Picture 1 (cartoon, rainbow, N blue to C red):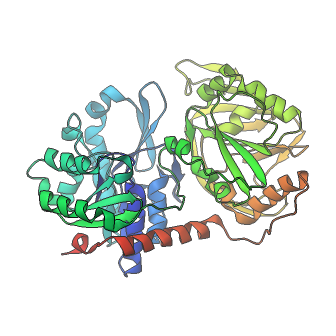
Picture 2 (picture 1 turned 90 degrees about the horizontal axis):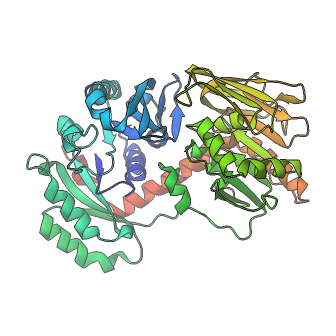
Length: 487
């Protein structure tokens, strides 16, 4: 089990790296996180929702993602409320102040059921903790750290982030707050995100081992590779500047942005600069080659946020002046003419909202979610290109006019305007299809008079797999995992 001294110390990626490392050693690692809070979601083959981080860990382990690997998923939806998902299925909405009162027992049952499913794979569980294991006001009701570690008698590694500063206090303080019955679960320490020569930390390593009686299993160097962030706040910290990029693309960072990993393949393109813009951004969008409107957990609320910031006018002016806009999922719904919420799913009372009017679409929200994977072909910008991904949304969308055409072979999955400059898709992960992504980028490049890029490139999953291999290489070089694997 990978525990951390706080949120954001690197547990997700270290867990993914351990899964890949164990797979290389001939083992069968099975990732697991009892409870996760994230708006970056994935849909498995059975239509179950799970956190994208656990999907990434499954790919690292060479397994198909399964919602049992993340049996409790909480998706924040504003006003201290979260949608509660158990074993891939929505089961209700909870307020923060009543969550443990109402959902602790059902959550623990879902975790036990998820464990049973994962243990059927007869492998070694590689478990990710959540936040800090010693939040004293929550410790008695903690579903996914020490309760789970004790239940499984897991060997735990405690990860601390030296980049944040105060790494000694992080570790000593966490260990001091453990109960006597929990302390023996910790098998070792891991220092993450170290910059410079590791030999300079040798005195610190010795001090930690003397003070704690625990081995420092490794000092993991800072990783320059980019991975899908688990928390949308990371987007503000990962502005990867490419001063020589040919194209500049803006992603509107909605207040409740979801599935932001959709844009990882674009970020990985060396010729593309991706900027994340707050809705309050002022000024013209005209210097961007394209604007992307992403998914949202609160489509209507985020639409109103755009309108309150006058960014709706900015987007409309940008498109009217010849700009290119691609909207995904909730962004597609916002880009339409009308959004109808007769059941009060997006707000406390039923309402009908005027959209951005960039596509002639009508969306009607419905209680049941659409959750399914797709393998399809596109009609634009290059007909017949294979494209894969998944749907994850409430609501059905229909075209109100004939001046849009289907974006895919299947109706209702996406649309593109007759001019080809405005498109909307329900397909998360559409940019992962390498040839389609390059055809779209080449269309943008043609508008700028730039030469085309090669389109015979692999699916983004191949590049992602290489990055996971590099992560495993770093762990193999910097970390001694043997104490975690001892019988």
